[in-house]
Image (cartoon, rainbow, N blue to C red; front, side, top):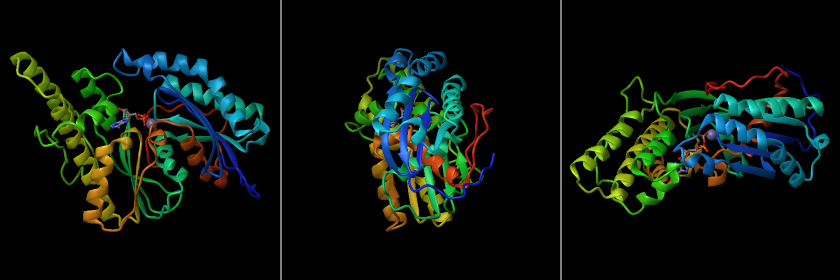
Length: 349
Ligand code: KG4
Ligand code: ZN
């Protein structure tokens, strides 16, 4: 639905709502860049004993929390519904039951307060987390989005244009971290634990496979072979009673994931003559990824700026949803009240 804004208000306040996986989040953001409030309730503790997110539990807890989180976000921003200019929500990709809670809540608020409703692609939202940090973003830009559910390389030739260069063919990078950590007995979520443990290990200790996928898949990813290689090695060593030094295993696995993420991003930046590179998504919080990306970009493209959000804006959050909604608000690109959750919504918007 397109509704042209005759004149934009000076301060556009957007309420963002995020429930695509296991974080219930709401935030108020001004003009797509200034965070007035941000609340996240993570369910990590609830899912930890299952070693991963249980969709049914996630949706039930979103339902219990969503109203309170929205109220807190409004109160902390010092805003009532009538001060808002729009309500934005991630409507995909994600877990359908989880997404539906955010979508229903956003629709109800928009209807009750007669506000425009804005549907946001969750992957696009991760990218827009970088617009909340005051970074000097320039175009064209290449963005690597790596999270628990997705791994994608996106190109923004100019403001508000996004194309998909490539994505994972199987597991997402964060999913590989989580599954490997589970088999290593490190708990959930695996990324932060492996990140810490890897700091004590040798990244060249074990030679794990890296899937570069040839010319046709040069910007695509695949992590399932690596994941199986780690799991097979662990099982084999356990069966034969051989000792395995877990920090070396963590560091070597992490190095294999990071090398593929980094080299493909460096290649995409060259091919598309990027003026800056962005990282986003939960895996962008990884310390080895950040340092390797910085190093390799400096070697391959001296002077090319690299930006990534602080860890709290890498993992799922609501300010990124409101930030991604802002250009849509300016274009008058609003969703109708029959908006639905789209669990497999693709990137490339
Ligand atoms: O973006 P996010 O909160 O949720 C999705 O949209 O999927 O990402 C969560 C993922 C999990 O797989 C988690 O293990 C991973 O991000 N993660 C990390 C780190 N912190 C979170 N992976 C590697 N290193 C980290 N420091
Ligand atoms: Zn996410």
